[in-house]
Image (cartoon, rainbow, N blue to C red; front, side, top):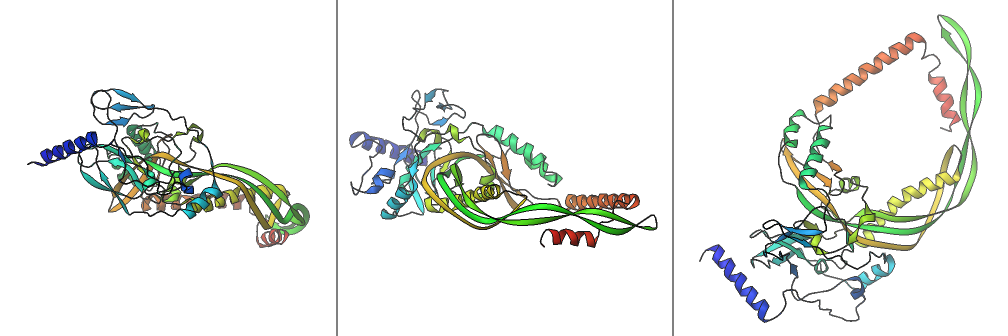
Length: 428
């Protein structure tokens, strides 16, 4: 019996069992009906739940039609509208959910073993992947995220640009990298496939109240006389030297933070995913698996509390700026900051990326494209020859500028005494 015949036989047997015994999708089984985790979406199933997306007209596998609210059949062209969820994108209380998670530990498997609902073949997905394609028949499969992570996504931003548009954005981005090797341009013209993937993120809201103390610096100027040589003659001139008076400052400031975004994936470096901002989070739609058809999707690898620690670092930079503004003056010194967070809430969302990589001179480089805006960030090689030429040109321009200034007397008075005067005035 050939492989195709064996797969078809297994499919027929599976379908017969489903028709005779039970529906294809098993309902959630709660081991403890009073478990606090029930309110936040943590559940276990007797078998991993898979979902496929059949065409209503011909039964073929559907894929999400980018930029629409429907799934499209690649064979007959029929479109199935995505049913819009009535669920509201509500924020969850951070501290109460965190306590529930601590009271309801879950086992994190290394892999998910998937049984394809179309051809019955079994294959493995990494534990942080919960949507992908069957390697045997290409069926799009989405597993329940709660099998490996207790918090399910509440919302997502659907893809709005196609892979062709993403590839063109990457080509344009790479062409603007002046320090990239010329030989790299042929890679920008290549037709390497892009992978569409939904990346998990946390968004945090928090009210902050900050007490601070420090010093406010106000600049004033004093006249300083100095001697210099002009056209072979010693002359006396004067200049204004800045100095600072420091005054004590203290007080309180507050700020509400809304949708502080933190990537919850470890697959891509944080610097790459952070650079893809801004995202149009105001256009988030309630999570439904239909939007994942034809794409990969990850479950979060950065836990809720770890994500908030990162969010606090982002907030702290803004708070320090607020404190400096509150202190006022020309310069500020901050000696103490104490911030209290209250009414902290969060959402778990999925955001779309196009990802790909290429090899250049034996090294792999990755890049990503924002699936909403086409914004590109990534890794690329540098041309040492171009960098060296740019450095030489910069040094040459500096020499010419210094020569011109020297000839016009523009460098007179710029010396150690002036630098030390400013240093003493600024408290160095």
